[in-house]
Length: 530
Figure 1 (cartoon, rainbow, N blue to C red):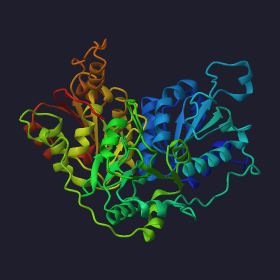
Figure 2: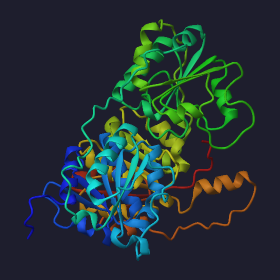
Figure 3: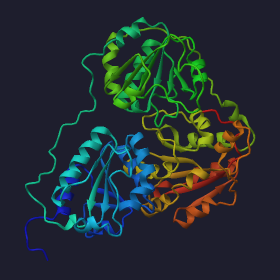
Figure 4: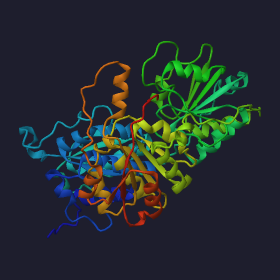
């Protein structure tokens, strides 16, 4: 029994965590974290995931939904190493995470004991900061500083803590970081040439980026687009929808190669990119990024996006606030754009049970309130055409393009937003990167619907190999049963092979009782044109 009235470092850390609303710990711990975790206070919730990538993925979904710092605990080199890909995704997806990484006992670190890790540079430059407290008593303050940085920068911050630090006596003089006023919705005092560029343009166009995905962002950009009569594209491979995709001015996802970008933007003399860099590409193509003589403006709160954009003007500030400040200077124009024709509308008329029919039934069942978390690369264009995003945070994908995000992120989103339907649409190959996450969903009764598009292969890789006119060395994997794996992890699963079975299952599914996985057998899509 402790006789001193001075709290331990771990108790001081809990107070800092409470102050910042970080009362849920997402973790897959090891021996270097045990001293922190034993006898947790009743108000601190612990969520276990069975792989560190899943830990960070679930926490990322939770943090994205709340836009507040979320606490993650990882185990030294192995844990951090397993999570690096997910940390990179968290950075680009703007997920505010405080990631505490356990380290060996600092009293013999100089001798490189078992489990000692070279942790500071292991995640590269993806964390916003890496903090190594000089002494145990500085740990609570470090966690507080990390929370401030994660919230201000909307990204992950690492704090490296030696295992013996938690039991040390805290120092009342080592005060945790003070409360600070954080106001992300800032507007530059001077919009520079932006009003003049817009007034001088005859045929402006708009690209909506992921960082404009908010109620205020949508409202401001809708008003700007309607005043200008401008078509609006979604940024290529956007992780979120920056504009309502059922709006009459919406024109779909901007292509991801220069040739088709120039074709899409032909006839326009100004491009206004809101909440993204200019412009995201995938395959390289020769030629200019945009049509000749087109001026480009970028509005972003991300300094790195502004720096790397080949633009005539970059305005640094909250996109919603900048656009709102711009509106008084924008005169009303008219538009003559015909209704958009879905690129993949013919797919809905096919008699064969394909991905298009699956997506149409999902939309008919769950409607605009659903959050679609996507990781099915070969069918993403179909998905975006058939299930338009009609509410903010209605769509989420991995901004990095790496696999293993959607399944855990959907769990975190549902934990943070229990009243909205959350549907993870993933390929069977994609699901295998974070299949362990299903255990966490089942254990905590998190009612996510996982729709696995099962074609038994890496279909996108096959399509890319065809472009190289060569034979790929990778095999198909039709023998893998995603449903069987789900059931082994405690998650109910059904195999769906036709439209009638899907309709019946969607009608009867009860997600209030926990998660459900549908292994939907579909043929391979024959084209891939991001």
